[in-house]
View: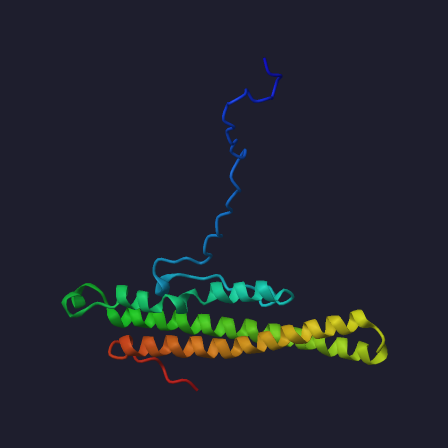
Length: 185
């Protein structure tokens, strides 16, 4: 009789499955998911949130751009076609959407500019320290890192302009008949 753990002659070896499959971590739920963009309130994140970590800064902007990403769907579901005009007030819906877009765009621009100002201040301080200690390699590395982060944040202003232009174009195509926004100063 074979010893414990030894296979009997002629017996097929069977594969033992691993104890458990690798754990799949679900994607985080979308923050700020709303049913109707024009009627929802989005908590304005604090201006200092995420400026130190660029990935966190980008995630904050991604979440805040949800209204712009979903504008076509929102307009399609809230602005009635000719057969449903009596059931919804398109001028009120367009006005609410306009106000939501304005608030979202203003908040994002404020946060981006605030982070640019903070990072610019850090870069300026590091440059001054670098002039005093030119042999400090760690300081140079930190300065380069902050300069790169500053350039990336400045490029977010360009991204913001493109996102805003697209949203206003779609808004104007669907709402120009129903709502005339106030003239900007």
